[in-house]
Length: 502
Ligand code: HEM
Image 1 (cartoon, rainbow, N blue to C red):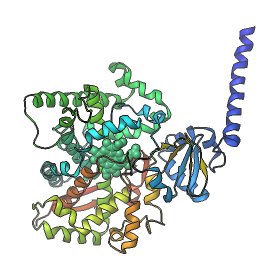
Image 2 (cartoon, protein in one colour):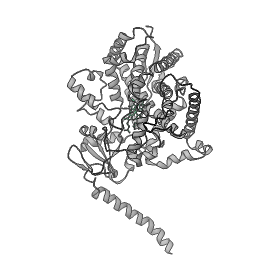
Image 3 (cartoon, helix red, strand yellow):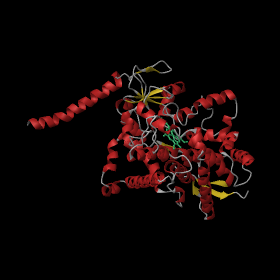
């Protein structure tokens, strides 16, 4: 009898608790003065509602809509504010900032011993400083001939496809190229993604699927446990788990091969992530990580550096091909330093080309490959937003790069791909430069910025110079995207990729 009463009372008590919590969160919580949907004030799952089901990758666009109604700060969770006011961007994301990443949010993402996932500011500094020199401009310049070699082989593959009468899915072709670039830089040896006839190798598909599953993992962290199930069960539950295991083994093999060669004095002729990790530095307090630590670092670097660069070049390329004037002007400029189809020019010369530079900047803005917010925690003592509103300590707060790049007060006609905006009035350009933030800013800004730039310049320059590219059956509608941590495009951008005669 007692048990029965207890069993009936329990759900009722729980319901009362939930209702009280909802009332507190909506009307009495310190963030209750911020506008936003009631559902967001009540539950973290508001984000999942927009990103997972019944909508897909839509939270970013819903935030855009809410900011239009409510202004620069919107409550998007019981303890989270989203800000779109650009005056606050360089306060939130700056060097020496006391806004740290939220461990609760990042612990679900895995690879705990990597620079990307480290939330403790002191440990992060140690990890990051171990890699900083490797990613410096001087070091990245040494990758130039390796990168160009990859582009040449890839360019031959594009031509083979053309001769075989097959248009190429450019997202996968470009991601295969960036995959081979970043894996060679990481492991001293590529994954061979460009060799796949459809450019759909397992690593390329896997990283894309992994990033896209992050919304689900964030909302339902137990999904991560699938990876802990015995392989023979897990592979029947999810193809991603099966591919994940394959990738683990592939990475493990690459690490073993590298270590063996390294210990025998057989070292790559260019800087590599593994080479860096295997070199201790007592002065800086840097020790060689465990094998798991090495794997975490390298896999997250590949993940951070592959899709982002692939997507930026693909989006830029589509826009350039769509607009004959932009394409022809760029080609004419490239011919000034690449007179023949197979000419090579030093990267430092490519960087000096004003129109190519304008096209790269505009691609970074327009693609906004890391579009959504990267939240931080408000430091002790709380902060004041530019409009004077107070946000208490411990609140999660973030700003989406996409909303900065598509803010019409900063970039006129933001929905138009317009390289010209980077060549006009110097005052306007200075403001735009300040708010061109595809790599974020501050202590947690992208470590791979120099590598990403070198990839974007070389890919764009040699691709446009060598190939007479034609868009095949692709419209603006195909290039619309869902925000799945990285953009997932609604259609496929295909192109004919014949080599130019001259
Ligand atoms: C166009 C290409 C790229 C874009 C748009 C991009 C964007 C970003 C952004 C916005 C962040 C900050 C994330 C945050 O605040 O949590 C970031 C971090 C990072 N990126 Fe990139 N990235 C690109 C290419 C690369 C490449 C090529 C690499 C290396 C192979 C790389 C490695 C990293 C790493 C290691 C971090 C974490 C830095 C830290 O937490 O200290 N990225 N990236």
